[in-house]
Image (tube, rainbow, N blue to C red; front, side, top):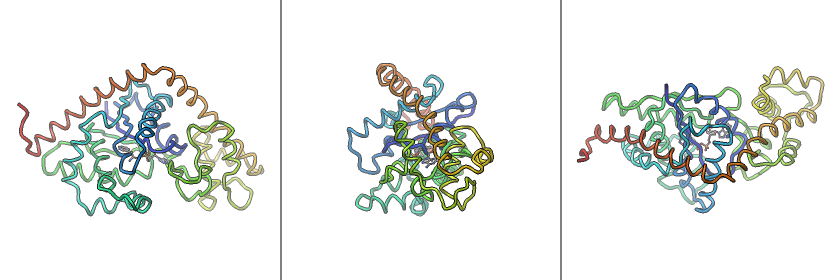
Amino acid sequence: KKTLFSGMQATGNLTLGNYLGALKNWVTLDSEYECFYSVVDMHSITVRQNPAELRKRARALLTLYIAAGLDPEKNCIYYQSHVSAHAELSWILNCYTYMGELSRMTQFKDKSQKHSDNINGGLFTYPVLMAADILLFQADVVPVGIDQKQHLELTRDIAERFNSIYGDVFTIPEPYIGKIGAKIMSLQEPTKKMSKSDENPNGSIYLSDDPDTVMRKFKRAITDSGSEVLYTEDKPGVKNLIDIYSACSGKTPDEIVREFDGRGYGDFKIAVGESVVSVLKPIQDKVDDLNKNKDYVDGIIKANAEKASYYANKTLRKVQKKVGFPERI
Ligand code: TYM
């Protein structure tokens, strides 16, 4: 079986973008791949976090992975900070990554503008830790949204550089970007991606939003001038709603355009909202169940951290040897 790795930050409230762009695609992959999914809490502290809040959110995210349908027996779901090999490999790879490469990362440029009072080293080397995540498991495939593509290209460059010096150490990973849902946009500013850190809560659907909130946000969603439901770049608001509806209902954009031919935006927005509610409700119910079952989730956390460490350490030991660290006696 080929190997797959992906991760998500436990920062902020997860949005429908995270679900449709990532999680939703993940749950179908375990028959084909050996899957590792990390809650990347070490990435989260590149911006300042409230410790109690981070701990709570990390747990909520791990629970959500399971609730969204990742079977923890078949998918290795774990906290990044529980597997120390991430930090160790990340250090080594830092020494094989150029300042120039890291300076070109658009996420770094965005984040250092947004957090200009705390442009720390971790924020700068963030993509190297991400490369370590992926390369530790010799992942063949990495499912992500479009915004992570540049980081993945850097990961490939680092891996190829390392391999060209030391021989075939790392598998070169391929991105896996779903066609629909790869970029869900803000409901209020459809030219911006839907983001956990958006200040305007009406722009994002959070996975924890109750049905009334979901419906209200869709009713208020920005549509474009005119009244026809058309799938075109000139109508980014409507196009985004079609993408969401398509991802949640399984209907194609063409079918949706036909379904709403001659009907106004009002009906359309209600249908989109209802399709989202029908996707979120079962997940929220499962989260509630799992929260009542603390021991079960604790058991998964422990067993999977051990499993992840086992695979990660295999790669780490190989790399340490290649770069010339003394053998363990
Ligand atoms: P993060 O936590 O920002 O996002 C998690 C995943 O959700 C996708 N995503 C979206 N997809 C569609 N539309 C959106 N509006 C949207 N917003 C987010 C992201 O592309 C991502 O796939 N650096 C990563 C986490 C990470 C990682 C890794 C990913 C750390 N190590 C190794 C893959 C492999 C991040 O911050 O994602």
